[in-house]
Image (cartoon, rainbow, N blue to C red; front, top):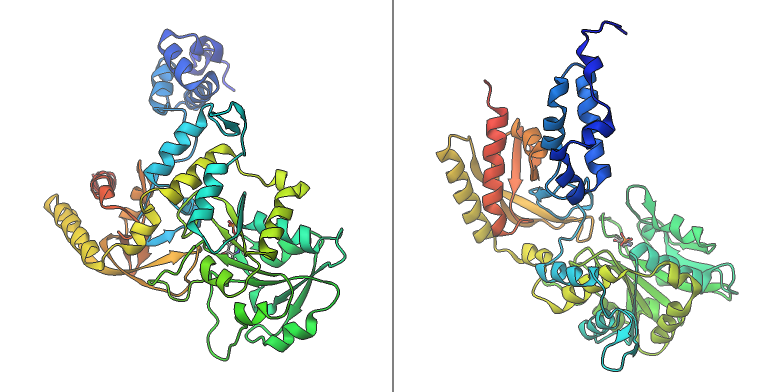
Length: 448
Ligand SMILES: *Cc1c(COP(=O)(O)O)cnc(C)c1O
C-alpha cells in the first residue's frame, strides 16, 4: 500500500457513482444492471492495477459491454469437419426451429385448445409430428435427452420397485458416451441390476437366452455410437433378440428415424421397430438435427402400452421437456432439411469449389491459404469410423489461436503443422463470415 495522496488509484470512483453516470443508464435499461455493473467492476480493477486511467473507467466499461444480454456463450463457426461436435453444442437448429422457438418463448397455446377454450394436450403438435415422421411407432413420447429416456425405462421396467430388477445387456455394449458419462452407471443409478452377457468382442443368442429369467425386466441393445470393434467379433441382431419373448429396448443413439444410405451401418428407428424392438430410444440433437430431447418410440402392442406406462410414470414429470424444446422439435420434424442433413448430403464437388474460391480470395489479400481435400466425420452422435469426403482451406498453424479468439470464433483442426478449416459442417452462407474471420485473424497475427 502506498498511502500517497498523489496515487491515481485513490481517485477511482465508487461503483455506484460510476453506475450513476448518464452514459451508462441506457445500457443498464437494455442489458440489465448486473451485467453493466460487472463491466464497471472489471474496469475499476484494471484502474487499480494501474492498467487504466481512472477517468477512462466509463469508456472501458462501455467498450466491454456486449450488444445484447446474450450471456457468455460465443458463436463459433464449426470448421472442424465434425458435423455433430459435442463441445460445440451438437446439432444446429434450422431457421424454422429457431422461428418456432421465438413464438414459444412468449405466451402460447401450449396446453390450450383455442377452438374450444378448454385445456389441450401439452406438446400435441410435436408429438403428432413425431408420430407422423415414424409410422412404424404406435406411440411416442419425448423426454429431456437420450440418457433420460434410458433412465425412465430402466426405472419403470427394472427399478427396485419392480419384481423384475434385471437388465440383460451385452458386455460389448457397456458404452461410455463422453465426458465420463457411462450408460451402465446411469442404468445402475436407477436401482436396476445389470446382467452382463458375452465377452467384449463377442456375444451370442444363447448368452442372452441363458441369462433370461423371472428377474428380467428387459433386454437392452445399445448402439456403440462412438467406437468400432473390428476383428473377431459378433453381436446379436434386433430380430433375433426380439424372439426371446421379453421387452426389447434398443438405444439407437443418433435419432435417425429411417435408413440413411450414406451411413449404411447406422441403426434407424423404423428398421429397429420393424425387426421387433418393443421400444426405441434416441437423441434429438444428433442426426435428427433438432433440439436436445430423448425420443421414446413404441412398437404396436406391447411397445405402445409401455410408452403409455412411461408417460404416466411419476418420474416422467421430472424429465419432461419445456415449451421451447417442443416447438423446436415440431419445426425440425415438419420443416425443411436440417443443417445437419444438409451438411451430411453436401456434395464433395461443391465443397471443393467453395474451398478453392475461399482460398483464392484469401490469397488475393496475401494470406497463405490453399484448398485441400479433407475428411469429415459425423461425430460423437453416430457413424463411428465413417469418413465423409470433404474439402478444406489450409492456413499456417499460427492462425488457429487468433481464429478461436475472434468474434465469431472459428474452430478448425490442427493437422500436419497446419490449421485446417473443413467446410462440410458449415453452410455456404458461412463462407463470407469465415473469410472475414480469417482476414481479422491475419491482422491479429501479422508481426508488427
Ligand atoms: C448419445 C447417446 C446417448 C445419450 O444421449 P443424450 O441425448 O446425450 O443423453 C445414449 N446412448 C447412445 C447410444 C448414444 O449415442
